Image (tube, rainbow, N blue to C red; front, side, top):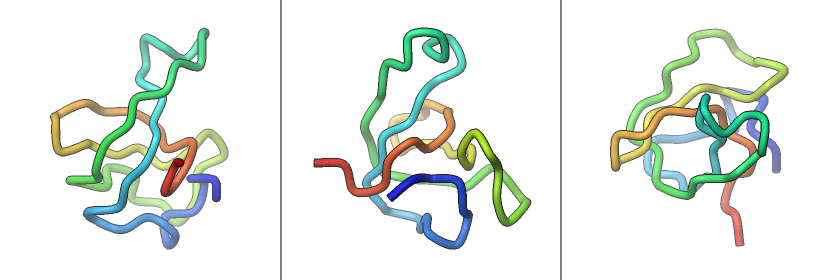
Length: 65
């Protein structure tokens, strides 16, 4: 699943995000969603979230293996 639709992301979901400073490399950061920061129903680059560890980025994968 990709993270471009807000309806597919829930608080507490395990996700992989790309932080702003890793956008060029595409390095993923894994964690659990604490807050959903994007208000619109979708975003082409991924919904912006805050993880439980405080990191902020756009969702690239939901329930990564």
